[in-house]
Image 1: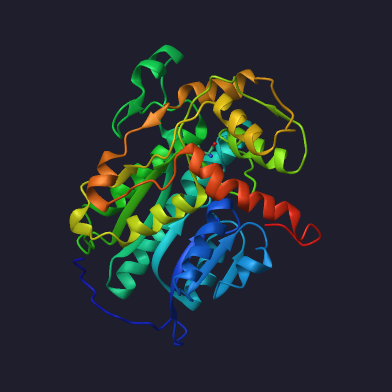
Image 2: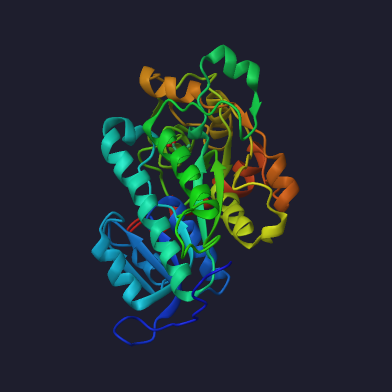
Length: 362
Ligand code: AKB
């Protein structure tokens, strides 16, 4: 990074020492939980979490500190910066695709204005401590928008630069976040005399649907996959809100957070783009039903498609081409659909619901 101010100060304006930190926003969400656990396993003790709600105590225990509040609240971010020098940001906070369609303007506020606030914070941190700040941003297959089901079936696996006309506010917001990140990395304050070059090292992954054995999703449209398994494990009937032939790509939560950590650690010189697809397996909703029935034969699964949510799934690609991630930072999925059920989902979900039913759940 080129900077006009190469100070390595760790002092706040009030003169006390600030500690180096990895900032995780949306820390209370599904990705946040899994990422903070992974960072803790890797010995990172300087995680500072932000979430709109109080964190689960097990997650809070892995953090140096946690802040409850809105990422659009400047005074919250200022309080945080008075105590910490931020070196790396995992900006996970977002309102997902289904929830976003009920409150599009709020989604824009959280997903775009929130991202802008965090990018600005990261750029100011880079300027103050004279090192570039890594900014890791989970994007989504929601950034794609296939015009019709026929085109989706024809397109099969799509590359990063194809079909970027999303149908949801969330998808539009994610695409905007990707562009803002690229702007802050390459062009931020282009005309300013005291411009800091490449203050931000922006890296983003377009994730497919993600399935966690430990948390249940909320507000997304790919939720039918994980919801079906969690319902079966609890002996509850499940009415799937998309048709049996609906197909999009999915991966497991451990693979998703590993991908984030792997991209964050990749040498910058190997990266040929800011935004990478990663893919796992591409089942239909009927394939999910078959796998769930294999391990939970009594599962009561029916299909009651919701036209609106179906139209969102029909606009997302069947699969995404992750050859750039494989080439640039050695990305490789761990699981097929079958091995995800056998080795991860079923054992962990059975354990989750069998034990500790009286304990607070993540
Ligand atoms: C959603 O369904 O909105 C998310 C996503 C695919 O990004 N899970």
